[in-house]
Image (cartoon, rainbow, N blue to C red; front, top):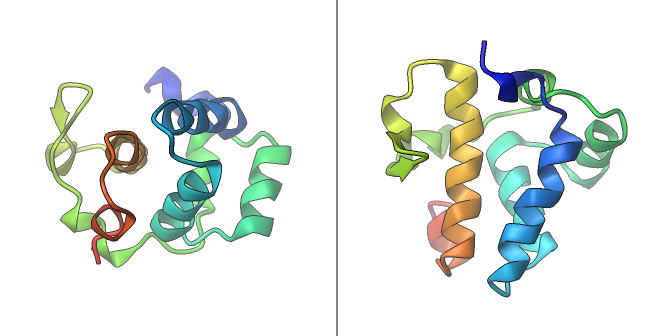
Length: 114
């Protein structure tokens, strides 16, 4: 099992925000990406952060993974996201990829596959 599976989402979330803010993007945009990907809303996302759930639980309890996740393609951490075999690792990397696209200046419509 990968070490990241047991890490708390609350410990990783600020890193996503920092990465975005370094490139003049916002916490609100990171949140919008998380809502789009997982189906969480502001209240349920805050609850997951406060409870310090691990990444396994965070994705297991996600209300609804977006049906457009199959449109997320490309490299992240040296792997093609569409080729990652472990379903949990793939979901984590989908989120990494979307935050990466945000930090690289992509427009939200493109990031959210509209």
